[in-house]
Length: 138
Image (tube, rainbow, N blue to C red; front, side, top):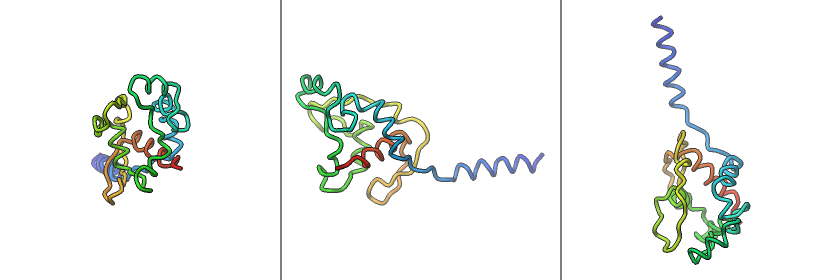
């Protein structure tokens, strides 16, 4: 009995230490389609079905998310993108009102290199959208 309890604890400890794998872009694409495409468009170019309405209300159309890298000097700004989606940087852009995405902040975390060589734990859904956005840069 003691041996099996020890084996169970050991196996739980090992599984807790195994790093979670980063999500693939297709996982992020599905989340993007559910949460972002209505404003940013199915290809992320800022032409979603609500884009005209948003521009009329806020004076700005949703951003073209395929040009994030271009707007940041040729480097995809992972930390900025994560902070913007999760709401940390909201309020820095006057007149822009992006919805809260609480469900993207739930679930298991994955280690993400945010661009400074430091691995940060990020909720998997949020990391998946970041990976997808990085994959559609032009």
